[in-house]
Image (cartoon, rainbow, N blue to C red):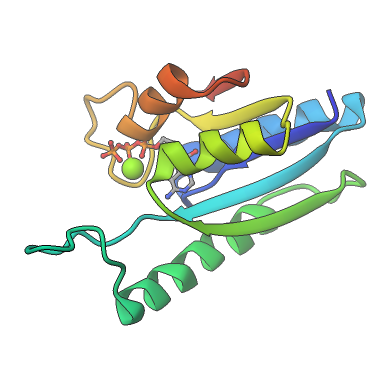
Length: 140
Ligand SMILES: Nc1ncnc2c1ncn2[C@@H]1O[C@H](COP(=O)(O)OP(=O)(O)OP(=O)(O)O)[C@@H](O)[C@H]1O
Ligand SMILES: [Mg+2]
C-alpha cells in the first residue's frame, strides 16, 4: 500500500479519518494525499451546475482551511503528505481521482459537516462506498 487518499471536509469525523490514515501510512511507508472537494453551486434555470466565481472562491478558502487545520491536528511525522482542492460533485470527484491516479485506499469519515445526529453514514461516504472502484475505509 503506497498511496492513500483522505477525504477532508474539516469535520471531526474527517479529522479522525486523517489520523487513522496517518496511523496506517507510517508503518506501511505510504504517502497521504488530503483532498477537499468544492461542489458546484446549484443555480435555478438552464445551467443548474454552473459554478459561481465568488461563492466558489469562498468555498475554496474554506476547503483550504479544512486541509490546513487537519494537518495541524496531526502529531509530527515523517509521512509524506500533500493536499489538493478539486471542484466537482464530491463523491464522484473523489472516486475518479482514486481510480485515475491508482490510489490503494480511500479514507473517509462516516459523517461530516452536515451531520444530523441520527445519521450514521453521510451521503458522501455512502456514495463513495457504493461507487468507488478502489478500497474504501470508513472511519467512525
Ligand atoms: N467536500 C468534501 N471534500 C472532501 N471530503 C468530503 C467532503 N464532504 C464530505 N467529505 C468526506 O466524507 C465524510 C462524510 O461526510 P458526509 O458529507 O458524507 O456526511 P454529512 O456531512 O454528515 O452528511 P451530508 O453531507 O449527507 O449531509 C467526511 O468525514 C469527509 O471524509
Ligand atoms: Mg457533508
